[in-house]
Image (cartoon, rainbow, N blue to C red; front, side, top):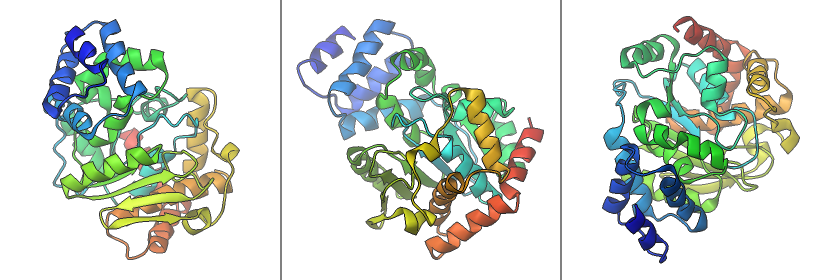
Length: 330
């Protein structure tokens, strides 16, 4: 690692193969905590290159525990995290609303590194057992239309750096990797990013995969459709900007998205919303993200149709039924 660090400290970048080898070695525990922290810090000081990001993703996917549910056409709804906004679990709620429409969802997530409650935190709090049992995960997708993949159980590198990421409590390149390395390799992806630079990088990388994708970035810095400002939307067919009124029927305030001070509070907010007891603003934000995911699948001719399907899933109780069914399968 010393040679790699000296190389990087002279403002040089790694090739795709060098990046892959570095992360493979981190996964194997070949470097100490200080070395790994220094390595991660490099990418806080400068922009990561596409080759480096692809190399890191190659390493994670080579080592990951595969989840072969590709006989279903699944979707993942995931943000890079690290936007520092402490919102409630918008993406995870959107997953349940999407599953309530009948669409199969394979959600990839982790504990919060820069927020109070990441997807894994809230899922555990709701009684979900984090697992890597592929047969059980497939039963959940078949029976409840959704399963959850806790990233460290499938990616040795993420487990190796978990404590460091938590101690740093700021976004690192691992935030960027999450949406690229879902071990179920979903058919469709809705990816939220915290800045335009990352949106451009993801656009390039996802174009290579030749799968349907949608990248979303709220222009005021959220890695999801926040409805606090306009949203830039990028798909394989181009990009455009939509207003909060166009996407969610209204503008909301940052305070409406508050995620709580504890994991318990985050779970309480989650439960109120999924039961249909959320505020107008909370519902609008979750529905907008769910609708964008549904539109990404190509099953709806227009965004408004996808939005109506999301509304029906939430207001009819279908999303709530999905959660109850998933809990019963644990």
